[in-house]
Image (cartoon, rainbow, N blue to C red):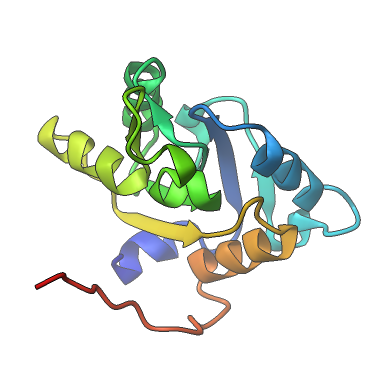
Length: 160
């Protein structure tokens, strides 16, 4: 993601929580991160009711075929830069439902579909776990804001 896109959301981050078919375990952890114990508001995080007001979309669950049109509409409604934080094993890669008939999988497949429809996504962050920990979500928010350094480098492994 470019520095100009990141500079637009330096001060506060308004997040829209998008459940695409999850079991609600990650959803509970998202709400836990917003409580005074973990206090995500100290980083300027505010939960909003509309993707039109969001800086970041928190995506939980594997993307089901039933939810796919609604997910596309929600992401398309979000202003640029469009940043998605995929939460949990299901959001990152589809979890145990990655190859079932009723899901397309995780955020990678969703971004491909969005790109085919001409909807650009400016950044994707992954928070693995089943369910995620509130601390991991806060770390992802710190990465989005640029106040924390990435601890590992990404590497794509290809089968030969």
